[in-house]
Length: 363
Length: 75
Image (cartoon, rainbow over all chains, first blue to last red; front, side):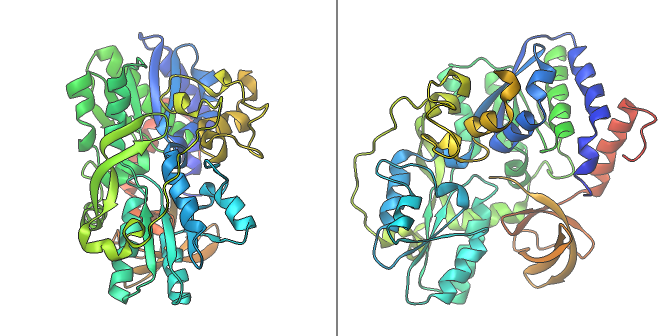
């Protein structure tokens, strides 16, 4: 397919790997923030190709994985309310909460629909006027504008039974939080491609300014990743950290102004809780007061339960780049994609699921 | 989760467009990319176009790859 196949040529990949390995900086530690990048890296064996010249660490860029246990429990409690329809992206269904998952609720008779798009959730609401349809708003700045657009459309169409439980999060604050924690020592960040298609490159200016490291926005094909790694290696070689875009066909420096406007019309930033990391100030998106008619947290009260984290699960450490899936005693023994213990094994782009699927040669 | 696929826009109708996805025509929202025209490639994420592919920049990147691996055809 156009704009995909050209970025998968293994001969060019080999040349890029040679170029990276020939650079004078060795032992570079880079974090790929985005779960989509983790999958590309694992599927194409890029870690092995670049080792030991470059070490790639996975970050917290899997929205399902970073959803706090308490938020997941809230979604499950909403699903148990009589008459509601929960609309969600498929990844959320199997994530275990403190007491069961959405899948468990569905088995008990709960009405849970997997949708491809917020627009599909809106159609469900239009087709079921007597029942509340609650869409689980999961995702970063890539997804948040689409959900915001669905709320604006619901408003324009006068739909009164469409609600969003906004668990949306934004990326720059968590990158800062990981660097501030000081648990990992990285020389640069491979920045998310489609988040940046929306927000542009300016919001990452803090990387060189405050932390003295560079960031390169990367696309999702193997050559895109290798190009970004080479650009970061060149920055390290020349000791000029900067924010650059390797994924120029998809990302403009200013981002997508219309998507930013739609997102800002509907949402405002709020403190948010991240699994394994804790509360990060102004790292989440909540519906503005004028949209509270669509806000599931305003429309429905749920009993708060004391959340229980699964014993022995290292998802939290893995999301911070402190541990790898292979450090976890549950990995591939008790915790598998069929019977996941933690969210990093549920989402296909979670570090554990990617390691399980593609990482055999690491073991 | 943040996956987005480049697809070609066939027709535009208000806030919607029909795109060609893996040989099949599919309706998407262009509420976030109102400037899109038939023939453009857009990155589609969960049924919404989030960016119009910059074909000149795509060609610049491919030129860089061709310089790295001279003599390769088909890029």
